[in-house]
Length: 186
Image 1: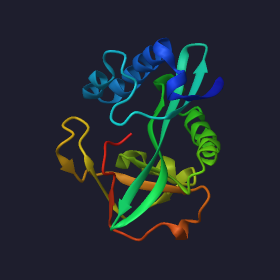
Image 2: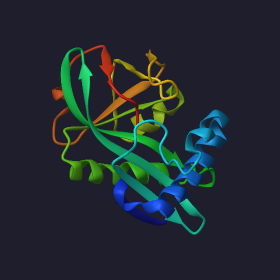
Image 3: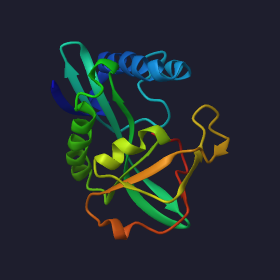
């Protein structure tokens, strides 16, 4: 399946950032051509910049990626620390190979290392089944965050939200209908 590495953002260096920029631009650009420019000029993030990355490489280069960022979300007035997952990507030729499942399995260890109570992510509705099959718990809540393109316009996109207990139980998640990022998504 390839080599797996956890890398702190400051350890990437110029060459690592450029390699990720190219790979993520290609992966996300193949799904949505409007996403490719987000990774221009050696930029390896689309919204908020990850602090930690999980990178899977094979003989063809970067095959999979997950970014992590510790942050507080606000759920109907309650602050909740999470390890947000974002930029979850699998190269087209590796999709349906089990690599996505492996990324999520490896993400569990990364979240434990970050010592957060929950993993958290938002995804498009067509990816919902993937996260459910891999043990993530769907929230009955809506997301609210600034749009990455404008940063001043707050929207409530059609996203499906998920949590994964790390050091807490699912029952410890605060009840609420709106999850506020109060910052750019990862």
